[in-house]
Image (cartoon, rainbow, N blue to C red; front, side):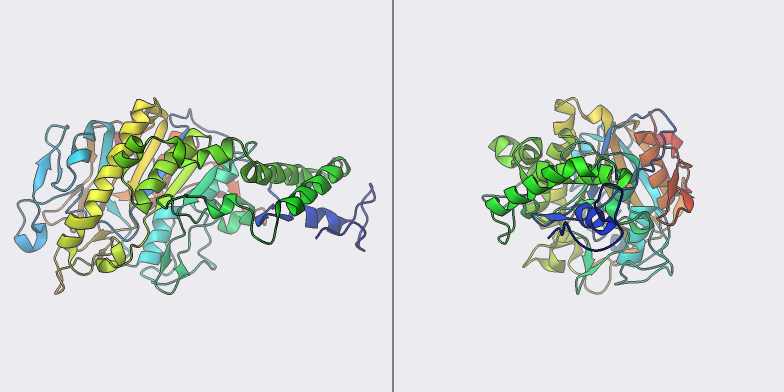
Amino acid sequence: MLCLQAPGLTLCDGLTRRDALVAGGMTLGGMNLTQTSLVRAASAVAPKAKRVILFGLIGGPAQHETWDPKPEAPLEVRGEFGAIPTRTPGLFVGELMPKTAMLTDRIAVLRAVTTRDQAHSSSGYQILTGVPHVPMNAESVTPRPPNLHPSMGAVMRYLRPERTQLPSAVTLPEHIWNDGNFPWPGQDAGVLGPQYDPWLIHCDPSAPEFRPPALALPKEVPSLRFDHRRQLLEQLDHRFDRLGSVIETYGTDSQQAFGVLASGPARHAFDLDKESPIVRDRYGRSRFAQSVLLARRLVESGVSLVQINWTRIANQPNQGGWDTHASHNAACKNLLMPIMDQCYSALLEDLEQRGMLADTLVVWLGEFGRTPKFNGNAGRDHWGHVFSLALAGGGIRGGVVHGQSDGHAAYPVSGVVEASDLVATIFHLLGYGPDTELQETQGRPFPLSRGRVIQPILA
């Protein structure tokens, strides 16, 4: 509750400093309206992409069954699946990617990506931020110093001011966590400050009568009470005009929150009923697949970066995820690869049909790959020494393979790509050079990335 007569330092218009800070952080329907710094980094290069979708196969997809099959390797390495030709002459992918194989002329494949980290949490931190975790190979770690580098979504919110009803970065359909609900580091704004955290929306777009919780008023805030809060803020607006950047940002954040809670473009973006059943079926009806469709609607509505996290699936081997320590082949064939191949290909085709692929960058990624050899449970374990990622769309030269792994897809041979290079390339395509300066909350500057742009994959 905002106290208009609270004691404290009084500002020149009679409003106390405490009032201003409370108003700046006021919660409306459960949404925290935080302050936002006005410090922004300037665009350094001509952008080729307006927006980016991070297609996140969290858990670690195997390079052997996806972008880097090894048909000549021994059975215990290559696995039971073969390789199939693609639209790109000379390029083969795993046989469980038939739909994606027909779209490789839009895709650049990176076959020598490395984090040298075998733990979900720390390798994931490196992929999402471009900075190695300290220490490496650390599992079930949570965000804490010195591992507070901002995620790509947070950097996007820092770089792009938000003057619309939607933020510039959204994460769907839940955060990434290890067993015990230990959230990975590298998913928030870290040293930039919490005002730049990507909006995390927990939801299941595949559920009947889908309505994301973040867009609904909580039970303790009935519509009449919400209207009273809005009227109070409107009455205070004229008194905030002289409080500087803090209140300027307060106005933006409050308008943003009201815009999402009220009807309009923001709510329209989340209304999957606007999509035809044919389109929804084309993506697939799983939670992840419908989150991918929702991501397309969000970038279409003005969101600059959407990260889609693969979520666990109950009553499935390996908890329905890509961490296939057991029954790897069965999990790939019967669950993981069909969902991935269908919704990934649907996303690329849908964007292209809407005239959006040319300026929408789609990044297919996981936090690492899988071991060259199967373990005793017919599974593949964690492997960060070499794995594959793929980029398509905005500014990417399709039909390209960059980098090479050895005959077992165990170690890189050429064209090594670090996580920092991936981050540098993504933001280069969005118009920001690696040396773009960001500032910590304490005012200390640091570069957007210390990596190099992957020039061979650029159009």
